[in-house]
Image (cartoon, rainbow, N blue to C red; front, top):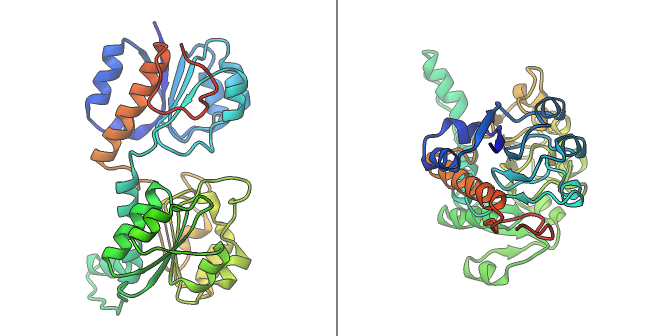
Length: 323
């Protein structure tokens, strides 16, 4: 029987037809609660035919130990920074993923974080629950400028919603979609530094790479307005947590709303958990019933197709021929 290691918790916890897909395929499921570090993955692999994974560390060592039985890595979600795609390609293991399934949900979450910060939601709601009637003065986002770094699917959805709120939108992306920008009146920034220096809100939607890691750090924070707010629904490692916490605690910027941190789950003494004007949610920006079922269905279909020798819906390393 084909054995599949299933580690993504939202796939497991959310009801939907994706469970029946795996059952009908006749797989034997080995279930773990991810995201798992390399050390835990190494304990589980060896007699597994496929991974249906989330943000688990699938390193070269993990892939090598999984051979020769491993046939497919099906990523639940979009980001592939935790998967050693280069090594998988070298060992002719197809890596599939799920683009285009969570842009609505994640973009909505960005505005949840932004509005929570601008309206002082957390402090006032917590005070009310504690029996206090704490009334604070917030800010409108109408007329404010938002700079989007990464104008892909999610960045575009953020731009559309920002325009609906009456915000002025600018963006930076190496692969510029002029038709979209023209249609939604999105100004093209010449650099990320231009966005850092000019925007009231900075929303991160770029992938994690050597060039984007610690994109937000002491020197970039120093360029920002003192009333700037940074929103991060991409990857925690885009932001240097120590530098961000210091900027918040000293009033260098006004707020940070993030769905991701550089270590998940974060330790109790993580600097962002006690920083001023910081809202941290536990990487749930894409976790809605609607989005989970889309992602899970696509991940399951990719897995079934690839194991069956058929073309998956989306493959990160198409040079690995399937079938």
